[in-house]
Every structure is written in structure tokens, then in C-alpha cells.
Image 1 (cartoon, rainbow, N blue to C red):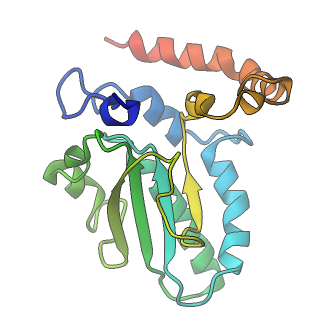
Image 2: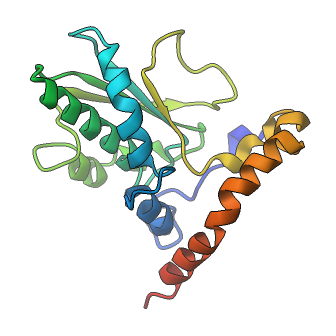
Length: 204
């Protein structure tokens, strides 16, 4: 049986679900402490260049590869949208339209993502997205296959996905060319990761 047909995070909103057990991912995605490797620093650096290359009325297409299903599903793309919108306001331009693609394997619980309670929390006047100019689509499929047409995306986000690189060839997975990069980056941050994890699991 193919892994893509059976692999998924626990769906729903129960005690054993990913939605109730993804606090560590949520905290790490949300934190912005000036680390040059956090998502906020990366997007702040990349967005101005991206925005300057857009045509005035172009719809901005963003995809999150491996979105899973839970309270942190919408967070990465919302940070991107907020950063882009800040750049737009700085230039005095009119509002843009956004098309957000949430991608994961077909067995992912997309029903939870678009469930009324979670949807209302992230859409609407008090939510992360403005439904008047933001359109959200679920895309089921493996990112090892082609999911989108050529030149159809402006920004691709994926987090907590380094462990899926085993699909690539040995050269790019375990050879020194890859290992040195992984060790140099994650070796310095591992203490922080375990410390944060201990904080989460030790909470009453």
C-alpha cells in the first residue's frame, strides 16, 4: 500500500488529534525573536522583492505544502498575507486578491480545516483572512508529484518537512553536501527545540 494513501496526522478535534497536540508547531511558527531563520525574518526579506515584480492587478498565489489540520494550519499563510499587505500599504497601492492553496496528502483531514468552527475563527472581519479578497482552496496530493501549473505560484511555504527528504536521492539526503548544512543549522538549535518541547509537555 502506498504511503501517500495512509499517512496522515490524527484528524478531528479530539484529545488525540493533531489539532489538540500541535502546540509546539504553533509556538515555533508564531514566534518572531529576530532569528534570521524564523519565518517572519525570511518573509520580511523576500516579500519586498516579490511584490516589486508583480503586475498592479495580479492575484497573489500562495501554497502551504503539508498544511495538516489544526489551529496552526492558517498561521503561516496569514503571516505571508500580512507582510505582503504591509508592503502594499507602504506603497499606497490598492488592495490585492490572494489565492491560498492548502496542500497535504489525500488522507489529511481537510474536513476539519474547513469545519465551521475553525473556518469562522480564521475567516471574517475578526479573522486572519478577509473573505472579500482572499480565496482558500484545499489541494490533496503529494508534493513529490506535480500539483500546480507552471509559473502559477508566487510563494511556497513548507515547515516541519525536512524529515521527508528521504524521498530524494542518497546524494542529497545523506551525503556530506547535505549533512554539513543540516548539522550546522539544527545542531545549534537542538537545545532550544528540546527546551521548548519540555515546556509544552510539562504544562498542567
